[in-house]
Amino acid sequence: MAEPIEPDSPKVKPDSGKDDPIVNAAAGAAVRADEAVHEGQPGRSGLWKWIDDRTGIDALMHEALDEPIPGGARYAYIFGSGLLFVFLSQIITGTFLALYYVPSADHAHTTVAYITKEVAAGSFLRSLHVYGASAMVIIALLHICQTFLYGSFKGRRELLWLSGCVLLALVLGMAFTGYLLPWDMKAYFATAVGTNVPSELPVFGNAIKEVLRGGPELGTLTISRFFVAHVFFIPGLMFLFIGAHLMLMRRARPAGPVSEDPFNPKLPTELFYPRQVIKDLTLCLLLIIVLGGLAYFYPAALGPQANPADTQFLPRPEWYYRSLFQWLKYWRGNAVVIGIGVIPAIVALLFVLIPFLDRKPERRPWRRPMSVGIFAFILIGIVVLEIQSYRDDAHDPAIAQQLALQDKQAEDFMKEPFKPETIGSVAEAGSNNATAAAAPAPNPQVQQGQQIFTSHACSACHGEGGAGTPLAPKISGIGQKYPPDKLLDLFNHPTAKMDAGRMPHFQFTMDDVKAIETYLDAQH
Image 1 (cartoon, helix red, strand yellow):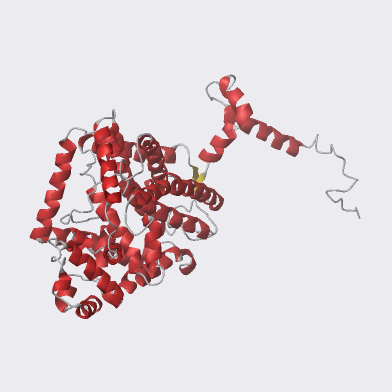
Image 2 (cartoon, rainbow, N blue to C red; image 1 turned 45 degrees about the vertical axis):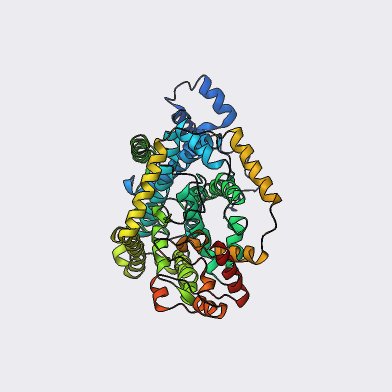
């Protein structure tokens, strides 16, 4: 019997495959495949070959474009590329805007007004950036919905889903931090309400708010922190997680249609190039047309400079935070912890853990009634809250009138010519600072009361100094009407009328109440 020969046996000659027709055929096929890769490429024998020899760009292009897609190209797969396109557009337009922007309470609004009114194509670029933020949120939500309904998170794609969840959070963070930077009335008051939300949480709530603001009130430190987060920190994380997301996607391979097996793909594949590339470019072209048209025909508005002393302004967030704004209206008193902390945390946790909870290989949405039903319920709830927020404003005459007035003020400001900062205004500010420095030191109890009043966003309803607004009555001088013990009881246990007006249930101490009373009496 012949003795078997091991692959590394000395009985096998190193060149034993030279005359093997099978080995020669395989080698020839490899050479022909390499020639086919480069065949027909323009300038392959000249500049392109010189660049490819030094960069390996051919291999990179084929790694990117020759990705096999189970079941072939589809328009359902275009949202990821669209999201990447808008993100890059935001980086480009944001870079140009940052060339003129000064992140300080004294100059932020002036520099944005200069960009909008004086810089060539400045209004168009800023409008592209503003509308691009909304486009990123919309496309991110569409991408998440398509991924969930197609069951594309199934198989060995848990990390791919988790990286997508982080990217969604970063997109919302980009939108939130960029909203304050114009430092107009709308940006200031909406951010004041937004940063005040964490303070409703126990233990760490106020600490979180002060970290976001850089102190108890909104000012230059707040703008500086938001600017750094918006321009450096969050985009850096987004680049990192986009790279991780693409790497994990290439590792796991595209999931394909809902009929494909997530673990053992069986459908015939089609390369990413050219058909899927064309479909992705179609979305990019549509985004260019829509965003460009909106930016040209409906430039993004800029309102008057932020004035914290305005007692009439009604804060409203951008549309993508309207549902959260409406949700917070339904939670008052001790229940606010449940509405702000517990329920959102549970929903977010369920969302993140979807690949670990829905582990069956079935991908068809009609065969996953439980998970799809919960997802649809939450999505419909968000839409209903969004609509209800606008309906509440429209059906309250006082609120509708005030919001219309605010829109008119923003429109009038946009029509005004640009007013640059002058040396005289700086000197006047310095004179005011000198006068303030020469003034006697204020009552520390008044300062403490003002800090409590501001940190709990009381001015959002009662106005600056408790002067009153359409939402809530005047409370300056309230110490002349109620003694401290009565005020303490009212703050901690609001009446039915106060509850109907959405008055929060505070847990103040007697010292807090005396400080607030002293501050409000001083305003009166």
